[in-house]
Image (cartoon, rainbow, N blue to C red; front, side, top):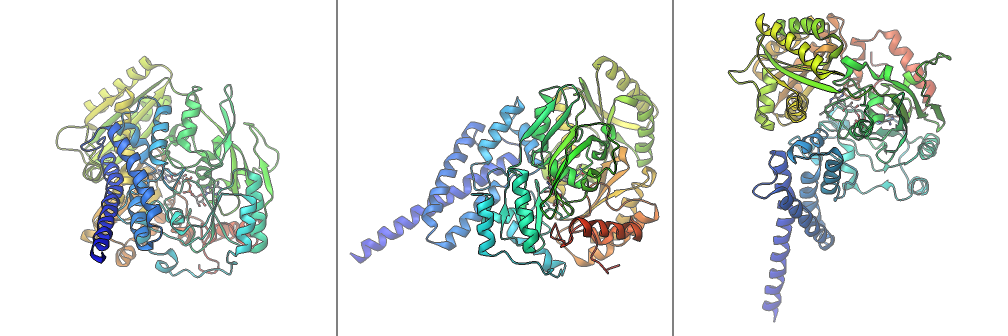
Length: 615
Ligand SMILES: Cc1cc2nc3c(=O)[nH]c(=O)nc-3n(C[C@H](O)[C@H](O)[C@H](O)COP(=O)(O)OP(=O)(O)OC[C@H]3O[C@@H](n4cnc5c(N)ncnc54)[C@H](O)[C@@H]3O)c2cc1C
């Protein structure tokens, strides 16, 4: 009797383990297949979708069964999360990997596939090797002292539940991805995530938090690269994910008014249907929110042509720390009535107010786009090519990006992308995009330019793309470098503005200084804007390596009157270094502005401005 029960028990256990293995293996293998650029090995795309759906059902049934066995639950959960995070950059990648034709269709498919899990509304793909649970707490790694904010009580939770019913997240497992940044380098331990839908709810939340002295971290798509979007301690995370409505679009002026949580790529698709485009574009477009873009004053690849958000954002609505709603959501191109307050919030990284809506000027969608991918023998030739390019392409030039050969090797190695230029490879690559209203005219200009730079020896190899698929493939080589770097190990990231002629010297000097102590030292960026992304990788975080890099990189940048943060902001990681780029008086004034708008300092504490008295 006893032995038959034992046999039955072990049979049940074995069956459960069998399903558990399938539940874990299928999503992992599917995710792996997608990452590898295969539809699903060895299955087809539709089979992989069925597998994914099936494994999801199996998984959730198991979750239910295992809820009585906490140890199992944790194991299962880890399997699920690591397979189901989707990356910022990956959304765009899916388009290519799934060979999707219409953008609308692709959105539907991706949503169907990736939003079945626990992280609804998240498109976030775990690209680095470390899991969220392995990232050291920011407060411990950097030795930060918690400021005397209140702790969230049950009474507070009851208030939040009343204000945003059903949109208060307190499950520690569900909170994990919101506590860790995209690079998996900083981690907080927030116990509450709030998801308001309208500015009135944001106002209620902030008014209450201000009164209760509760700290708040605004969060958009959580793709920021300087540790600004996640808490340092237990700050309440205020997510704009559900504030995703377009308010209006004017087809004559191209002015778009929308809520802050709209995803950049979704907005671009929306305005494209009406023959316009968003004035900014960046590798994280599939996940970042327009509010996050404005809060960081994101640059990206269209800045060369359409200028910074400081020019294209016409108005915004922000909720102040005390809950007051500042409605500067004007749609006027000209408005000189007093100080331009919206500028205070652009680039303020969530420290002065929560941006809840923006009004933004969209340019017309160009009728023709061409991309040339060229190889240059030296950085001097990259610069000379830029000079010729500006002269010969003038008004149709929309991007001039560069990468060094080390970057090319990383995207080849980690993402299996192909170098489109045959031969031995070039020390530098340049991506030039033109966009204009007359295809024939643009092509003629581009051909003349190419003839000139090839015959003069400035360019040693090149390829030209006019159709969308090839254009996307060429752009992927540049846009996915950030992603490739995360596969290479721990990344020390620097986003520097410098006079263009000095841009690559910093990479060479850093490489020479670090020698073999770094795994890779690479340089790429928006050359047309004088913006270098210097990245150093190592197998793991090493304080000695960091000491060799900093303050060297900052001192070098200051020596040539550069900026230590060109477009990513200061966030948590760079805030102490602000003095390399701003005089004491300017920082002091910033601190006064912060104290005036947020006297209790509840908005995104520990970010952007240096700790008082630390200089
Ligand atoms: C692959 C990749 C490529 C990238 N390429 C570029 C690039 O080319 N150019 C560039 O500039 N950046 C780039 N970034 C960085 C990042 O995508 C941008 O900084 C982006 O603007 C952040 O938007 P987000 O919605 O993800 O904001 P989050 O990461 O969620 O937040 C960023 C900061 O803004 C604050 N914030 C967010 N939303 C609000 C709001 N509504 N109100 C107030 N404060 C808010 C947060 O508190 C935080 O301090 C890249 C990132 C990745 C991962």
